[in-house]
Length: 120
Image (cartoon, rainbow, N blue to C red; front, side, top):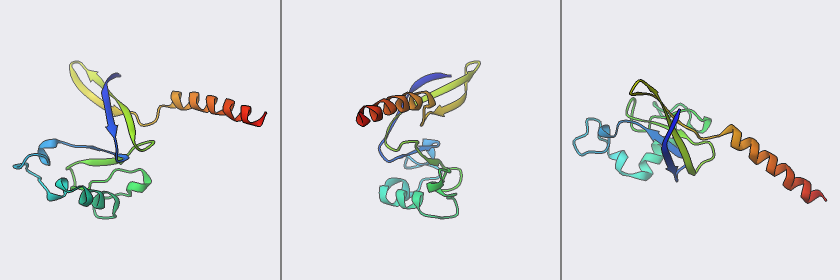
C-alpha cells in the first residue's frame, strides 16, 4: 500500500461518502442536517434506524442509508495516515490507519522504561 496523505480529525470521527450527495445546493440527497453541526452530531450519536451503535465502534449513517458512513477513530482527535492499494492504475482499496501496532509497541516499550525509572 502507498500512503497518499493524511486526514486531520478534530471530532473523533471520520466520514466517508460521495460529496456530490451532500455538499452542493443541487445534490441528489441534500439534507439540512449536513449544514448544521449540532444536528449532524445528534444524528451521529443518537440511536436511530441507520445507526448501529456508534459508541460500539461500528459505522453509523447519520444522513441516511447510503449517503455516508461515520466511524470513530482509534485515539480520537489527531492526524491519521491514508493509504491506497492499486490494481493496475485504479484504486482498489483505501485505508485510514487509526492505530499503528508497531508504533503502539514502541510506545509501550518507552512507557515501561519510564515506569522503571519512577520506581528507583
